[in-house]
Length: 290
Image 1 (cartoon, rainbow, N blue to C red):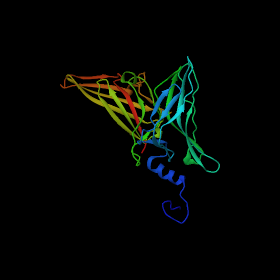
Image 2: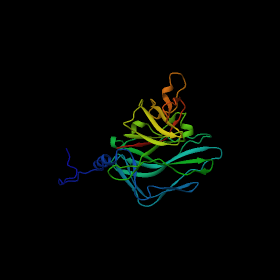
Image 3: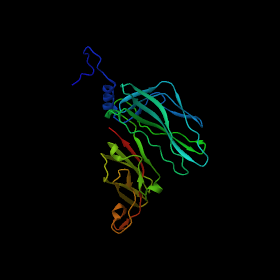
Image 4: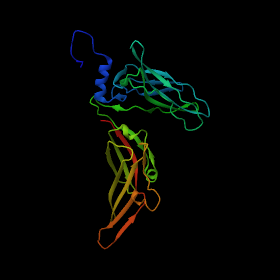
């Protein structure tokens, strides 16, 4: 046992002690606090981006930018596209000295659909000597630099209350009859909120705690329309990769359970109407870590 916050006549508190405490409060994943400019990225020119002030954590290890700092973006080429990543690298040398630097990891130029470059995977809480935290994605099309895309999660208090991570957004017209793919696996989150929309325009949310691959869930809606009441329901399945959600009614005689819609009239003698149309689609998914 080690009494971290107690005096014992010698220097004994290390950065690792502080990191463990911070990680227990805000989580072990890297994050940015709602302080300063939150590392706001401004593209000054085709070859220069400036990162604003802010406070962040890499696996419980705190870092701060007190004045804006600029990085160099390599020029693009006509006919090629590229994704660059701006982030911070934490490094520990053989003597235990720790340092941090703002860097750009350049992607590979391709003619279509560029992928993000590979980034280091070290975790400081596991004793690794280096780690990387991605802040912004910069998409380069030819010689044109696009609008920076945020890659970090925000935490708005030291008790871990955080804004959710957007895992998916889409349009009802497409998602009602297609499988959706999230930006991250659901197993990285304590809870996900699945936001859905019906063909009648109603919007609802279903929370899923401890989501896993293979999780099934059903959403439903009751909608009055003219002289009828429509009861719409649809079942969904998180696929084995834990990133895709089957949001389509599978074709075939044995798959009608995926989507159903019932219509009841206000009068008892009007009969029952049943439809297997895709009347519900997922329009957003948000992830939370507690």
